[in-house]
Image 1: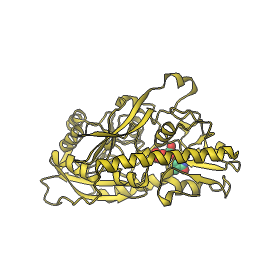
Image 2: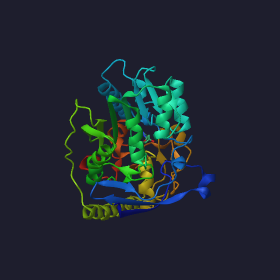
Image 3: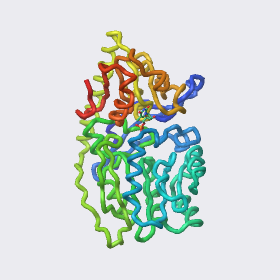
Image 4: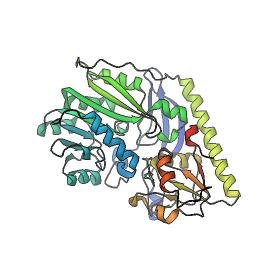
Length: 386
Ligand code: TMP
């Protein structure tokens, strides 16, 4: 049973970047988080409706960083071993993965209309639907079952995982492979990246919980790959039918957590957030110019939990043109292009996209001063540049 261990307060839609005239209409909910020590399930206890988050106005583009373009190319090249294999992608966004699959073999599922028409225009049959058994039935009317199914940063978005895995079982070929990747619970706990918790992430997966869910649906995990640098630590799970004798079920070695561990972690992130605010206030009092790079959905959690607005962070730069000219959800920090916002007058940069720190620091090196300070709330030594 899920027990509430953390309340990150009143939060807006994390990807709901908005115009000034829409400030009054903004929707808020309570970001409450539960944990079940028996299954290691971590899930949100209150969620906005799916249509409030995933619709034609969805602005997050998976191809927004060179790191991710390269990462998904590797995913496609290492997953698909047979030349004529058919591949289904669930949550195909702007096609960053599927573009590596021949057009006649790739099929997409994407609930956001803008991105569904994007992959359709690229030449891939795309179902503009949420992932469930109804969508699976619709697909099976037109296609045979799939040799490979891929999904990145999408399964953790689906509140009803039983329904999602039932649908996977329906469309997966008897000897097929379902490969999916999502942020990893252990990494989040170790580096204090509590900003992985926001409305879209209905769950943060532990391999124990994935084992629990897959077993319930006649499936098994036969391989797990960990990527420490992807979204601060992601796991890629390889799943097949339980009766597939080619692949034995893999052992799961991650750390197991108690409810006490989770409560202690919740207290520690409160401390980290207080320290971040103190640090920003300190620089502000010294008259420093503080900005942020990366108008991420993650940072919505931090800004709203910590109460960080334009009084502390003057503006955010983001390379996504659809976000420029809008304001951050809830605390309304203006978003501008990197060309407009990054120059030698900047003293301190809060890394909203701390997960792309290397790419960001290399890319904007010449626009910013050498002595610019990068700060983040994330604890990993690797992520802190002071
Ligand atoms: P993400 O961490 O949720 O993937 O979002 C990253 C955001 O950061 C996305 O809006 C694009 C933005 N970004 C930049 O503005 N400059 C960059 O160099 C990179 C890599 C990302």
